[in-house]
Amino acid sequence: MLIATINSSIVLIALPDVFKGIGINPLEPGNTGYLLWMIMGFLIVTAVLVVSFGRLGDMYGRARMYNLGFLIFTISSILLAVTWMSGDAAAVWLIGWRVVQGIGGAFLMANSSAILTDAFPANQRGLALGINGVAAIAGSFLGLVVGGVLAPINWHWVFLVSVPFGVVGTIWAYLKLHDTSERHHARMDWAGNATFAIGLIAVMVAITYGLQPYGGHSMGWTNPWVLGGMFGGIAALVLFGVIETRVANPLFNLSLFKIRVYSLGNIANLMASLGRGGLQFILIIWLQGIWLPQHGYSYEQTPLWAGIYMLPMTLGFLISAPLSGMLSDRRGAYWFTTGGMIVTAATFFALTVLPVNFSYPVFALLLVINGIGMGMFTAPNRAEVMTSLPHNARGAGAGMNATFQNAAMVLSIGVFFSLIIAGLSATLPDTLSGGLQAHGVPAAEAHQIGQLPPVGVLFAAFLGYNPIQHLLGGSLGQLSPDQASFLTGQSFFPSLITEPFSDGLHVAFWFAIIASLVAAAASWFGRPRGRAADDVVVPPVLGGAVETAGARGSGS
Image (tube, rainbow, N blue to C red; front, side):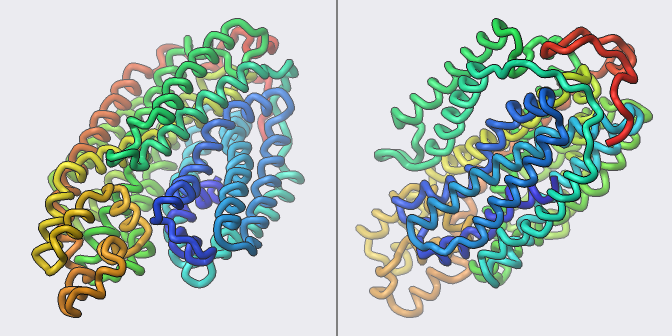
């Protein structure tokens, strides 16, 4: 799980070096698609496939599917590391194998929680899943640092670092992991698989392209293809729901949502993921585009240092997740899930009142508390949701839980980026045009630059490029050396963008506050009432026989 999530974020920091290595400028309009797919492709594939692969685990053995995922993940990592091409061919190759790598990651994510739930008794499950959750969240932040260290040395190492772990993990899992749960062979629900995949892919691709400019608009939400993908995808998902109620062996048994703990636990997980999913990107842009340049870091250094300065959040999560998982085994999960989301919402509110040019110790403290809140929620929520499921539905149930989380991450990125871009669009054009004219740029050219879509400025800051140098290009040669040096220095752009960025930032954080409070409410009302699922007879699900406690083995 650690390696899978490191690979989901390691590319974010390494993108400037990767694109430089293959000879592509990702900020040119024709290359924006490459940039977005390098960021989103892995997330989209894992979100779409985890349910199907969890269902396959229920049918053919979770350990077997987990091992297959390790093998696919390792092979794709090798092929990514040996990329020898350049230009468009290299970009397509990298995106393609990142998608395959995501397929391997989906096998791992779909079955790891179910294997742990089978292996541990109910009074140890929170701690076990807490450690697994620590690996998942810690990997997403460690990837930023690992990518920042390795990419400047050689961008191929970003993909190569996974290979030895993948090889050892594949062999180790094959030798040591054994299925302890009863398999439930059934016919594959091809119609359900197809409609679910088509619907979710259409929605997520629409979100991805909705972030790109269209026509005279700063974003693509008025693009007919984006609207068609969004509404067509939603229609396909509605059709998926209808199909699942009418087939003998559905991909996902919707009757599981009648289990109150499971349904409200998934809603809480969805809203928590919506609140925190885009946070990583926004904090990176905040640090790389404004704070780090203002404090003496060159734009080329900002990707690595952004990852380092965000480590306090990982520290808070590492402290609280296993501890809350262990304590929730003894005292119940809802105190921790509800309290964790309230703490997280409080830190989001504190970030709204923090000045854009903040004092780092205060920022670091808020990140630690935010990580503690997320850790308090994650492990108990996962344990509570998995324990509520019948034994023979845990693979598909874990897959659906992971789908909510991964899909919410993609949706959250779209929402956060859209809110930030909307905030920038209102004031940045006039601010940028006026600032450039005040320092020697001709009015016509300054106005033209001011009308460029703000997404280019965001992506430039996100990738560690100097945004003004990117916008002015060859026009810098027409200015005096002093003016050119000032415009491309470390103070002009951060001071220029501070106010417009702050507007969008506040709206994004308020969205996160609302999402976190909804997650807290769902956690509170979803608390178990009565005996745990392991202590009762569970009705048959997914075509399996009735099971009682003790039907599965005790080890894995």
